Length: 193
Image 1 (cartoon, rainbow, N blue to C red):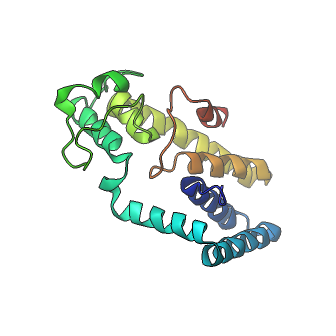
Image 2: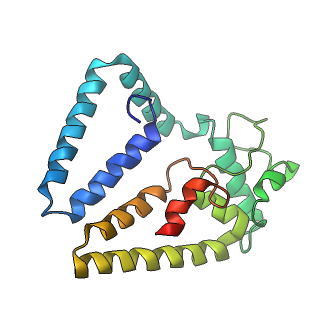
């Protein structure tokens, strides 16, 4: 994912390593591998122009989020949520409702941006399609699963529970673009946890 220029996946992987670093003090080899990985990443950043260009582009995309090509979808999801705060517009209805003139873009530089099947962010998709009620139910389920994973990890010292915990937090990282939560095969990682 580094050489291919997948910036979000690189950040998610680094976040995953940080979570492991935080919880696994006695697994020193993980820290060693992490240090080697970060050293290789830094060396590639310094020496390979393509990697430097991709990282710099990503940095400037974060600073100017409203110039990002996903921002119109994020904005439409927020506008839909504001109009339908409690129950949303229904599962898989973002693709239909986002075309309504009520949801013309305000902040995005892409004023005539089209719609997509989903807003490309799990949290915004849940908010716009199921409302605050759906988000509360979803977070209750996630908090329960995270609690159980941490509890099992500390009681059994089984490394797998920590991996599940870290993967779930990494997948649900709210500041990344994602596939559809309700219709994407990648969401299976959330439900298997």
